Length: 294
Length: 199
Image 1 (cartoon, rainbow over the protein chains, first blue to last red):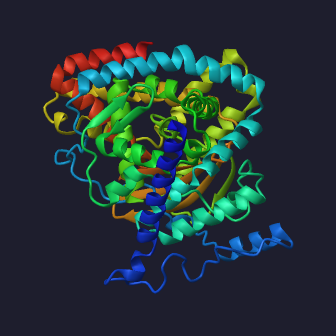
Image 2: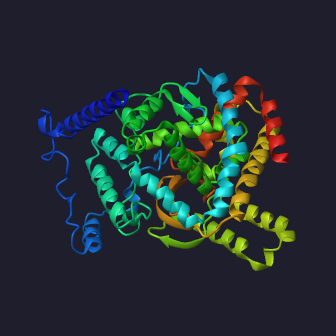
Image 3: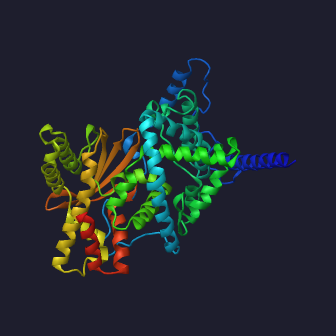
């Protein structure tokens, strides 16, 4: 009885989600101030190339023809003003941190968790599994959460990016062996469009709010936490894997794998900083700001 | 954590390594490239590979970096409005300590390089200031965007800030130092720097 009710709940959620998605997707069609003549697919992008014959060459040919790879014109470099402000007048933009005492405790907790648990496990794992395989696993998980990025590209009106993400998903899932190989990037120069709900909310004008350093999950903000919760419903892993303990196992493995590829970064940060807590908080703030402005 | 891979280079000059492509090289880019090539030479020099040669190697790298890093400008900007009220001696001491702090961090990284590619994307100049855009391609196929901010100091282009994926080094240190200065004093800051550098 309970199980059936739960299943209905999931279907209801899915329907609501699809309904919202359609509404948003079709907004340019029904909104009065619609500038564009298309709803979802940009005119010059063929989202559904025929994959039946000569699969890889057809797909890649389409990818190549849609590519604009002038290196210098992409965004994401941060503040590009050439002349800086006067030293005295430069104001320090930062995120409000009223929960600092608690955040610092969680920071220390995460620090210990990293050195006592995550790092040893990741190190051992990296000794057993060669790097190309681990990069493949990282690509696999990244490919899997395409819906999160895709939906948020659309929410921000970045239709070309959404198309890129869709194309990346199609290419990498087929030619790239379920996403293990990032063929779209290597051959088609299609880059991952890192978007999430926190960024979408930021693009809509929502400020970060206050800084929250979650135990286990790490640095976040009020806005980004809300974003994380929203993105939870877009993450296919949470629909495919229904038992919580298996979800934790999958996410845990993803984290260990990712960490095994970036061992040493956190240690470098600590070594370079006078106050690692403030360093992380500030870096997080600047990094998120840059992602939103991208 | 993507953020941590971003912070790979905080305190580091990403001195690059093989496969440098010049898309458009203005004078500021040339400066960076020159220093980069020099440091590559030092790190790859077989005569300096031995562990006993480490102090000499580090000295050479530091000398090469001194040519392009405007330590005083960087130190000034990390103190921000607190700079004005310091005495000459305090300023000198702070500049020296800050330089040592950065040197420690990036020397480790530079010596641990493993074939990352560096792509010079381009630069922009406005009067005495410039931006140089560089992309680092790691072994794991990750692209890292590095932005050098430069200033003409006595006719020479020198770096006064590095931004990695939008995270400015100066901004980050300024926040840390400001935090310490608001809670304690300049002497406390100097103490912390000394302890850090002495490690």
